[in-house]
Image (spheres, one colour):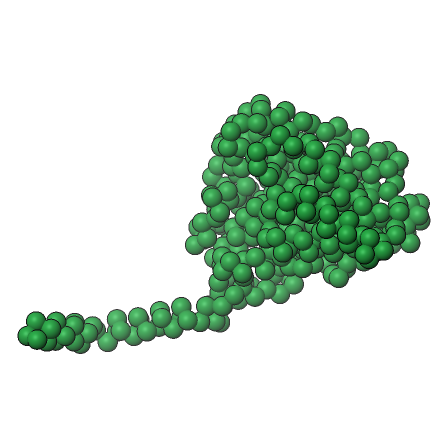
Length: 369
């Protein structure tokens, strides 16, 4: 009893010895911790976030400097975007300069597709299927949702994104990782289902996405793990079966494939996955916050945020960019040839303005309603 009493007395003495100022600071810290909340963003803040993520992706892979290619992809994308649930977003379609087969949807309307993906596609309906899938990731706010669900970044009770450079930097790090790593099963299934419904609604054959994925699966049949485009999706056989069931049950009847129009505008040739040059050291350089492209909004100097990134795929400040060297084979152990592929050196976007008249003519020429 004596020892127990002595222990209690000692604890009480220590508690009494805590200075009032320190106790107040501890109380405030606990209060702040209790007041953390999920990230909340306005549409404009979402668009600013998407621009910053797009900049990092463009700096890593480069952009195909072809106005005709961008105009064609933008026309197909705009047909879809106007029929989506968020037609007012400032949609931007970007062709990345790499042989890898991939696509990335950044928040706020930034859709990226690689030159390698365009090479593997065979018709406009397949392109529409891929773009529609990416559009749904954006209209469904899947990136922000993943940040909230995983509590990758949280905000103080009275904190806002606007004017808070530290919070914005952490959001860019988290969002870039989400976009590059892929979404959860639920989000991917939603993008599949809503994407083919969107493509069908504007007149494209809804089988386009499935046809492309079947070809992609055949291309990657010798891979020991899922890679690149839609890597986080359900198993391919299950996924394709779900698409076929949806098309049949919903009686989707659109038939436009427009293969001739596609092949007359897109002439890239696919590169075997084993022949894709990759960046030594993985996806180095994707952080890329220190070199601004011409269209980027002025931002304060990058700061190291609390978010460390998934597997260090994205690192604040872009310290590794340009220092990584390319290797010849895309089959190197531990390297994903799709994500880690060598890209072009020019990140500058190719601006395309599509008028209502041009869009109407494009749809009419393709027999789209």
